[in-house]
Image 1 (spheres, rainbow, N blue to C red):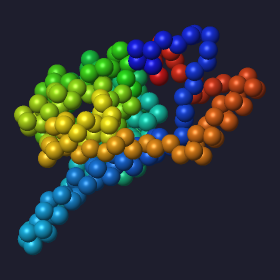
Image 2 (image 1 turned 90 degrees about the horizontal axis):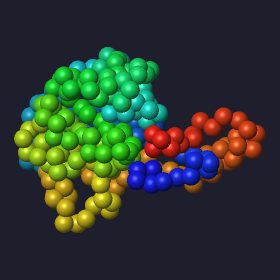
Image 3 (image 1 turned 180 degrees about the vertical axis):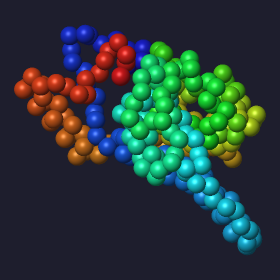
Image 4 (image 1 turned 60 degrees about the vertical axis):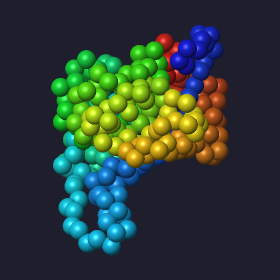
Length: 237
Protein backbone atom coordinates (compact mmCIF):
# COMPACT_ATOMS: atom_id res chain seq x y z
CA UNK A 1 0.00 0.00 0.00
CA UNK A 2 3.02 2.29 0.19
CA UNK A 3 2.44 5.40 -1.94
CA UNK A 4 -0.81 3.90 -3.27
CA UNK A 5 -4.35 5.15 -2.74
CA UNK A 6 -7.30 2.85 -2.12
CA UNK A 7 -11.01 3.77 -1.98
CA UNK A 8 -12.24 3.42 1.61
CA UNK A 9 -15.55 1.87 0.55
CA UNK A 10 -13.83 -1.09 -1.14
CA UNK A 11 -12.72 -3.97 1.09
CA UNK A 12 -9.09 -4.94 0.63
CA UNK A 13 -7.85 -8.25 2.02
CA UNK A 14 -4.52 -10.01 2.14
CA UNK A 15 -3.62 -13.65 1.90
CA UNK A 16 -2.98 -15.60 5.09
CA UNK A 17 -1.39 -18.99 4.57
CA UNK A 18 1.91 -20.67 5.46
CA UNK A 19 3.98 -17.46 5.24
CA UNK A 20 4.88 -17.59 8.92
CA UNK A 21 5.95 -21.23 8.92
CA UNK A 22 7.94 -20.92 5.70
CA UNK A 23 9.76 -17.75 6.77
CA UNK A 24 10.44 -19.27 10.21
CA UNK A 25 12.15 -22.28 8.63
CA UNK A 26 14.09 -20.01 6.27
CA UNK A 27 15.41 -17.89 9.14
CA UNK A 28 16.11 -20.86 11.37
CA UNK A 29 18.11 -22.58 8.62
CA UNK A 30 20.52 -19.65 8.31
CA UNK A 31 20.78 -19.12 12.06
CA UNK A 32 21.71 -22.79 12.59
CA UNK A 33 24.05 -22.71 9.59
CA UNK A 34 25.91 -19.86 11.24
CA UNK A 35 25.95 -21.32 14.75
CA UNK A 36 27.12 -24.73 13.48
CA UNK A 37 29.98 -23.15 11.47
CA UNK A 38 28.98 -24.82 8.20
CA UNK A 39 30.98 -22.44 6.00
CA UNK A 40 34.12 -22.77 8.12
CA UNK A 41 33.99 -26.56 8.06
CA UNK A 42 33.40 -26.58 4.30
CA UNK A 43 36.42 -24.33 3.80
CA UNK A 44 38.56 -26.56 6.02
CA UNK A 45 37.43 -29.64 4.10
CA UNK A 46 38.40 -28.06 0.80
CA UNK A 47 41.95 -27.71 2.17
CA UNK A 48 41.87 -31.18 3.81
CA UNK A 49 42.39 -29.61 7.21
CA UNK A 50 41.21 -31.28 10.42
CA UNK A 51 40.48 -28.42 12.80
CA UNK A 52 38.04 -28.43 15.69
CA UNK A 53 35.56 -25.56 16.03
CA UNK A 54 33.01 -25.79 18.83
CA UNK A 55 29.51 -25.00 17.50
CA UNK A 56 27.51 -22.41 19.39
CA UNK A 57 24.05 -23.15 20.77
CA UNK A 58 20.82 -21.33 20.14
CA UNK A 59 20.40 -20.87 23.88
CA UNK A 60 23.58 -18.79 23.89
CA UNK A 61 22.17 -16.38 21.32
CA UNK A 62 20.11 -13.23 21.53
CA UNK A 63 17.75 -12.56 18.63
CA UNK A 64 15.86 -9.39 17.80
CA UNK A 65 12.88 -9.40 15.42
CA UNK A 66 11.63 -6.18 13.84
CA UNK A 67 7.88 -6.60 13.41
CA UNK A 68 5.77 -8.56 15.88
CA UNK A 69 2.81 -9.32 13.64
CA UNK A 70 1.80 -12.75 12.41
CA UNK A 71 5.14 -13.50 10.70
CA UNK A 72 7.30 -12.11 13.47
CA UNK A 73 5.38 -14.10 16.07
CA UNK A 74 5.71 -17.33 14.07
CA UNK A 75 9.47 -16.86 13.86
CA UNK A 76 9.67 -16.16 17.58
CA UNK A 77 7.55 -19.26 18.30
CA UNK A 78 9.73 -21.50 16.12
CA UNK A 79 12.97 -20.27 17.69
CA UNK A 80 11.57 -20.38 21.23
CA UNK A 81 10.63 -24.03 20.71
CA UNK A 82 14.28 -24.95 21.26
CA UNK A 83 14.16 -23.50 24.76
CA UNK A 84 16.33 -20.96 26.52
CA UNK A 85 16.60 -18.64 23.52
CA UNK A 86 16.22 -14.94 24.22
CA UNK A 87 13.95 -13.56 21.48
CA UNK A 88 13.07 -9.88 21.59
CA UNK A 89 10.68 -7.90 19.40
CA UNK A 90 10.43 -4.34 18.15
CA UNK A 91 7.20 -2.75 17.00
CA UNK A 92 5.90 0.77 16.59
CA UNK A 93 3.62 0.35 19.61
CA UNK A 94 5.83 -1.80 21.84
CA UNK A 95 2.79 -3.93 22.72
CA UNK A 96 3.77 -7.23 24.36
CA UNK A 97 3.19 -10.37 22.26
CA UNK A 98 3.41 -14.11 22.86
CA UNK A 99 6.75 -15.93 22.32
CA UNK A 100 8.85 -12.78 22.86
CA UNK A 101 10.83 -12.34 26.04
CA UNK A 102 9.99 -8.65 25.70
CA UNK A 103 8.72 -6.32 22.98
CA UNK A 104 10.21 -2.84 22.75
CA UNK A 105 8.99 0.23 20.93
CA UNK A 106 11.23 1.67 18.24
CA UNK A 107 12.26 4.55 20.50
CA UNK A 108 13.18 2.29 23.43
CA UNK A 109 15.08 -0.54 21.78
CA UNK A 110 18.43 1.06 20.92
CA UNK A 111 20.31 0.10 24.14
CA UNK A 112 19.45 -3.56 23.39
CA UNK A 113 21.10 -3.66 19.96
CA UNK A 114 24.71 -4.05 21.06
CA UNK A 115 23.87 -7.38 22.73
CA UNK A 116 22.13 -8.92 19.72
CA UNK A 117 23.65 -11.79 17.73
CA UNK A 118 20.91 -11.98 15.09
CA UNK A 119 18.62 -9.28 13.69
CA UNK A 120 15.57 -10.37 11.67
CA UNK A 121 13.54 -7.83 9.71
CA UNK A 122 9.92 -8.78 8.97
CA UNK A 123 8.56 -5.24 8.53
CA UNK A 124 6.15 -4.27 5.75
CA UNK A 125 6.90 -1.16 3.70
CA UNK A 126 4.93 1.85 4.93
CA UNK A 127 5.67 5.54 5.30
CA UNK A 128 6.75 4.75 8.88
CA UNK A 129 9.13 1.92 8.03
CA UNK A 130 10.85 3.20 4.86
CA UNK A 131 14.64 3.01 5.42
CA UNK A 132 14.00 2.25 9.10
CA UNK A 133 16.94 -0.13 9.25
CA UNK A 134 19.72 2.33 8.56
CA UNK A 135 23.07 3.56 9.84
CA UNK A 136 21.49 4.87 13.05
CA UNK A 137 20.47 1.35 14.04
CA UNK A 138 23.51 -0.38 12.56
CA UNK A 139 25.86 1.86 14.57
CA UNK A 140 24.72 0.10 17.77
CA UNK A 141 25.40 -3.42 16.46
CA UNK A 142 28.54 -5.45 17.04
CA UNK A 143 29.38 -8.37 14.71
CA UNK A 144 25.72 -9.27 14.18
CA UNK A 145 23.97 -11.33 11.49
CA UNK A 146 21.12 -9.60 9.65
CA UNK A 147 18.31 -11.56 7.97
CA UNK A 148 15.95 -9.52 5.79
CA UNK A 149 12.61 -11.16 5.02
CA UNK A 150 10.42 -8.08 5.41
CA UNK A 151 7.95 -7.67 2.58
CA UNK A 152 9.05 -4.09 2.16
CA UNK A 153 12.52 -4.30 0.66
CA UNK A 154 12.95 -0.57 1.11
CA UNK A 155 12.58 -0.80 4.88
CA UNK A 156 16.29 -1.69 4.76
CA UNK A 157 18.82 0.87 3.54
CA UNK A 158 21.13 -1.25 1.38
CA UNK A 159 23.76 1.48 1.16
CA UNK A 160 23.92 1.77 4.94
CA UNK A 161 24.03 -2.03 5.17
CA UNK A 162 27.16 -2.24 3.00
CA UNK A 163 28.78 0.48 5.10
CA UNK A 164 27.89 -1.41 8.30
CA UNK A 165 29.47 -4.61 6.95
CA UNK A 166 32.68 -2.75 6.10
CA UNK A 167 32.78 -1.31 9.62
CA UNK A 168 32.30 -4.69 11.32
CA UNK A 169 28.87 -3.88 12.69
CA UNK A 170 27.33 -6.67 10.60
CA UNK A 171 29.39 -9.74 9.72
CA UNK A 172 26.79 -11.46 7.53
CA UNK A 173 23.63 -10.33 5.73
CA UNK A 174 21.06 -12.82 4.43
CA UNK A 175 18.81 -10.96 2.00
CA UNK A 176 15.66 -12.53 0.61
CA UNK A 177 13.98 -9.18 -0.10
CA UNK A 178 15.68 -6.29 -1.86
CA UNK A 179 14.75 -2.76 -2.88
CA UNK A 180 14.90 -3.68 -6.58
CA UNK A 181 13.93 -7.16 -7.77
CA UNK A 182 15.44 -8.84 -9.64
CA UNK A 183 18.63 -7.37 -8.24
CA UNK A 184 20.53 -5.73 -11.16
CA UNK A 185 23.53 -7.75 -12.32
CA UNK A 186 25.85 -4.78 -11.76
CA UNK A 187 24.91 -4.43 -8.08
CA UNK A 188 27.81 -4.88 -5.66
CA UNK A 189 25.74 -7.05 -3.31
CA UNK A 190 25.97 -9.98 -5.77
CA UNK A 191 29.69 -10.48 -5.22
CA UNK A 192 30.00 -9.40 -1.62
CA UNK A 193 31.60 -12.25 0.40
CA UNK A 194 29.53 -11.41 3.49
CA UNK A 195 26.16 -11.34 1.74
CA UNK A 196 23.84 -14.23 0.89
CA UNK A 197 21.10 -13.47 -1.64
CA UNK A 198 17.99 -15.55 -2.28
CA UNK A 199 15.35 -14.54 -4.88
CA UNK A 200 12.40 -13.70 -2.59
CA UNK A 201 11.61 -17.35 -1.87
CA UNK A 202 11.33 -17.41 1.92
CA UNK A 203 7.52 -17.46 1.62
CA UNK A 204 6.35 -18.84 -1.70
CA UNK A 205 2.56 -19.06 -2.10
CA UNK A 206 1.25 -22.28 -3.63
CA UNK A 207 -1.81 -22.28 -5.90
CA UNK A 208 -3.65 -24.47 -3.39
CA UNK A 209 -3.06 -22.01 -0.56
CA UNK A 210 -4.11 -19.06 -2.70
CA UNK A 211 -7.40 -20.72 -3.66
CA UNK A 212 -8.10 -21.82 -0.08
CA UNK A 213 -7.51 -18.29 1.24
CA UNK A 214 -9.70 -16.74 -1.46
CA UNK A 215 -12.58 -19.16 -0.92
CA UNK A 216 -12.47 -18.67 2.85
CA UNK A 217 -12.48 -14.86 2.46
CA UNK A 218 -15.35 -14.95 -0.04
CA UNK A 219 -17.36 -17.23 2.24
CA UNK A 220 -16.88 -14.90 5.21
CA UNK A 221 -17.97 -11.88 3.15
CA UNK A 222 -21.09 -13.68 1.95
CA UNK A 223 -21.95 -14.76 5.51
CA UNK A 224 -21.12 -11.33 6.95
CA UNK A 225 -18.53 -12.88 9.25
CA UNK A 226 -15.40 -11.11 10.61
CA UNK A 227 -12.49 -10.82 8.17
CA UNK A 228 -9.19 -11.66 9.85
CA UNK A 229 -7.22 -10.72 6.74
CA UNK A 230 -8.64 -7.28 6.08
CA UNK A 231 -6.02 -4.65 5.29
CA UNK A 232 -5.98 -1.54 7.45
CA UNK A 233 -5.69 1.16 4.78
CA UNK A 234 -4.38 3.71 7.26
CA UNK A 235 -1.61 1.44 8.54
CA UNK A 236 -0.87 0.14 5.04
CA UNK A 237 -0.97 -3.59 5.88
